[in-house]
Length: 114
Image (tube, rainbow, N blue to C red):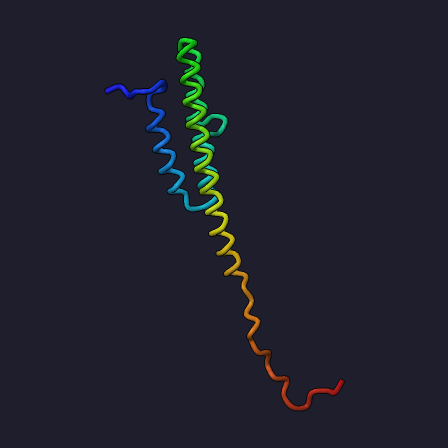
């Protein structure tokens, strides 16, 4: 069954990208997903290469749909990047936390007077 819309598979690609972005659990994994989706040789820029084979009136509509999809994917990537950065920052702060309530050892009797 053909998909309605100017670019076949675009809606599926956007849905897959949302799942992939949500599944990224680290910033490095998110960078890999971003490169695969919107990088120079990514899947969405690959759709731009199909525009040359379309009629001029369809090219305008398809180009707008691809750009809208790219913006939606980039927005979800940026939102996930903010979430992951906050999670990693909290983990780093928890690991670097100093216990300032710790009592130093008593020097004991016989300490030198100042």
